[in-house]
Picture (cartoon, protein in one colour):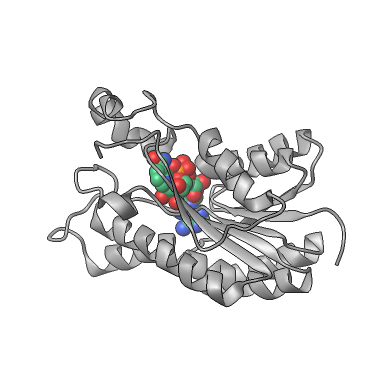
Amino acid sequence: MGGNKVAIVTGGARGIGRGCALALAEKGLDIAIVDMLEPEMARTVGEITALGRVARWYVADVADHARAAVVVGQVAADFGRIDVLVNNAGRGNPKGILEITEEEFDRTIAVNLKSCFNFIQPVVPVMRAGGGGRIVSMSSLNAHSGGVTSAVSKFSYAAAKAGIIGLTRALAKELGPEIAINCVCPGVIETELGNSLTKARGPELMKGIALGRLGTPRDVAGLVAFLATVEPNFITGQDFIIDGFQWVV
Ligand SMILES: NC(=O)c1ccc[n+]([C@@H]2O[C@H](COP(=O)([O-])OP(=O)(O)OC[C@H]3O[C@@H](n4cnc5c(N)ncnc54)[C@H](O)[C@@H]3O)[C@@H](O)[C@H]2O)c1
């Protein structure tokens, strides 16, 4: 194995994932984007290529365990190594306990939590073969707050995102010292997903954010890129809230 460092970013077609892909490319990494939105992936790949880095895109539903293994194998073959995995793909679910179906609950857990397992499992041997690596997963402030009043992310989403924190702590012990794994917990971030919440509750939300604004994908990407690349590194098993200190959720 050799060559430039390589990052996989799931859900990297748009939003926070796109921001993470660009921030890692600016730090000199080559990027593999995994998503379902082909035109958006092609656009982000073009933006990364314009930065002088190599980028490719791979179509997958991150909830699909078998497909994740195939994609990780393909990325390893195409790039020769994998140093960073950003488990970013995710989706909210607005249904309460009495409305949600079993299938909808399972799907929320699969897209947000099982997806991390799906990608970490095949990535670990590749990272170890290359001398180690970093994993950063996208949890949410909702994992801490419960997000009960949120329009886009009720209990099934909060449960999945809280699961990412437990997974992160346990795997830090199992994967150390070669691989460091952390997760980040964004508050409200201006993306397709975030906007669906803020349209309804923007002014009310803003009053409860100490830094007086919503977050941007670049805010979150800066933290993710730090965790993915900082040297020397003594951080693993942690979850980092990045929300401008929001106390109304
Ligand atoms: N926006 C916020 O306010 C906010 C807050 C906290 C956490 N998050 C989390 O950040 C992550 C990114 O969210 P965002 O706001 O950028 O959302 P977004 O909807 O703008 O982008 C999500 C990306 O993930 C992809 N994706 C979703 N499900 C997928 C699947 N099953 N397989 C493959 N790709 C899939 C989408 O196609 C899209 O490109 C998510 O995990 C989300 O839960 C977002």
